[in-house]
Length: 381
Image (cartoon, rainbow, N blue to C red; front, side, top):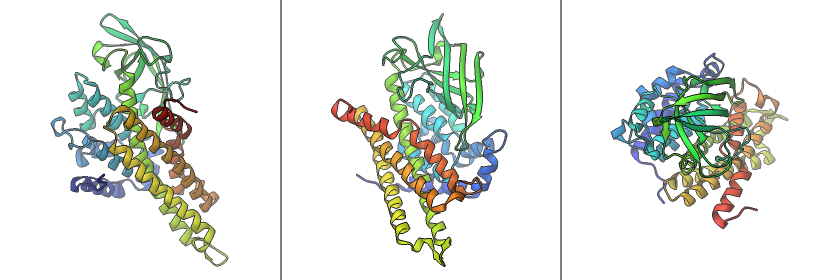
């Protein structure tokens, strides 16, 4: 397989990296996440108008850059390096993914809004009882004339405080955990009956508990076929998981680099702690974990357009390695830094918090190990 990037992809990486270095350093990020809004609409506007990266995975006919999963991977790695909280994942990867793969009638218009920075999407899929079973839904969408009425509760909807629209999974038929009967809707967040409770997350982002209380939506809010939405959800979540793996790679690189720099400067017994053999071994192990995470992320991204089983196996394998690397590299970075590694003033603690969140996002290590075994052998231990 060819792991080399094209000239256009390298230019995309350089453009994003350069912009974030100039406009999104650690101090500026701290001001953004502690502001009332919790994000920077100005940065989001620049992503759309100056850089054009909100169109990275969309065709040129839709106003995008003509890219795909690889372009998402490139952007998300730089997002991870800079700890960007603006909702590229929810809007471009997930919201855009649903538009691209569903045959949604108004997809072109929605994508135009995403590329232009005016449409911001949050994915309301998780429920308190659901764990990582995407079909475990108590939220319902019942037919009402030509439209639907939504009722239910979605938990930890990342980016919902900033969203203009929500992509919502709901049950239109079947039992609570059955694969059949799952439908997907694009809902205006300002719709009557939507109640949110907003809060900050440990890694500096914002999320909401979202309650749907007799929310009426029109028939054209349905994304894909009624009751047959689970395969679409699984495909988009696989794409999102691969993108999150790329974000983790960016954060892991910074954790490792920051620890190396600190170890070269910090002195004990009159010499830099980087000269201590036991710490050298540990930092080499950190490097190995980072490089394995890079390789697995590339593999998952390359296979994202393959058949469902191959795609899902590659993504789960990558997420297992990413989860292990986030834990190992993050914890060792903090341990080598000592207690100051967890202070708010030091960037390393912020990278550790984000890596810890990523470890469980869209499935833990144990979940993806079981999923990989099921996909490979038809059963899980």
